[in-house]
Amino acid sequence: MQIETYGKDVEVTPALHNYVEEKLSRIGKHFDRHCEVKVTLALRKNEHHVDASANIPGQTLHAEAGGQTMYAAIDLLADKLDRLVIKHKEKKHLHAPVPAPLGDNGG
Image 1: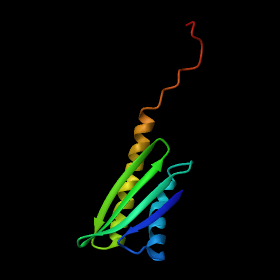
Image 2 (image 1 turned 135 degrees about the vertical axis):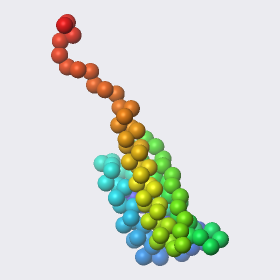
Image 3 (image 1 turned 180 degrees about the vertical axis):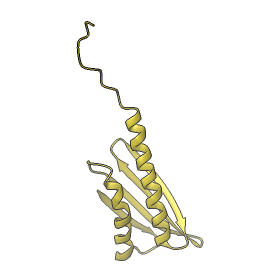
Image 4 (image 1 turned 120 degrees about the horizontal axis):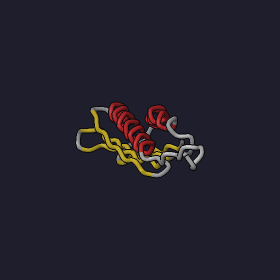
C-alpha cells in the first residue's frame, strides 16, 4: 500500500507523516492487491482538517474529517476510511455472481 501525505498551508512533519502511515496501514490489510491513498492535511479557520482519497481495485473512496488537533482528525479519518472500505467489500461480495451448481443437468 502506498500512502502519499501532502500539506495545504501546513508543514507535514516526519511525526505527522509516520502517524498517518501507522493509522492508515490497517486499510491495506483488506486487500491483497496494491492500493494507493492520498492524504491532505489542512487548517480551516480554527479546525484541523484531513482529506483522503483511496484508489482501491475497482473504485475510488473519499473521506474527510476534522478535529481539535491534527492527530484527532487523522484518527477520525482512519475510522471513516476503514468503514468505507469494509462497506465496499461487503457490497462487492453481495453482488458477486453465484457459481452454478456442479453435477448432472439431465436430472
